[in-house]
Image 1 (tube, rainbow, N blue to C red):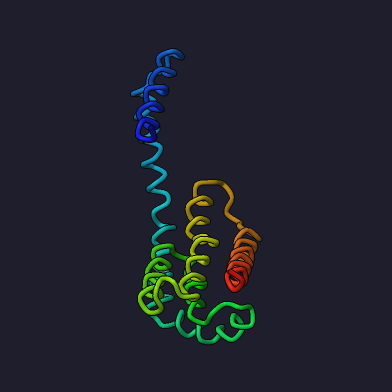
Image 2: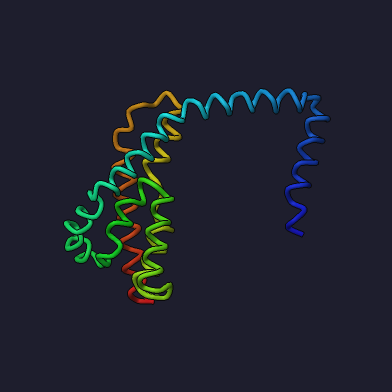
Amino acid sequence: MDVYIIPVLLVLLFLVTLLKKIPAYDTFVEGAKQALSLCASLFPFLVAVFLAVQLFRVSGAAAWLSDFLSPVFSLMGIPKELVELILIRPLSGGAGLSLLSDIFTLYGPDSYVSRCACVVMGSSETIFYIAAVYFSGTEIKKLRLAIPISLVASLFGNILGCLLLRFM
């Protein structure tokens, strides 16, 4: 039954355009033009985020900062093996997945560290990527408190998630 959802939606969309006498093809082409211009305007922001993530990891700054902050995170109940993941995840989902895979390989998928890593991946978002994508397409250029509040909320989600896993 689920395989019919997309085709049914497409047929309904086509019927609505016929009933409302909307030129479907012309509207589609106009939307595609807008999508291309949006992609062109987003590209520099995305390159900057990806470059920052790579520089952060390759330079060793991520590992150094993880080692430096691990005692603080340990006090909050987060294993030291997850500090780098918590630092990288707001920057890049792909880098976060890479670290998650490394954690699975080192500790096994059923270990406490791996389960906490899954919670970190599930309870956080790529904040800087999202900010680059969404705010670059709007007139809003001063993010003010959006990023700090998002980072704090993500950290609290990580702490609470790892804390709850201790009791499960």
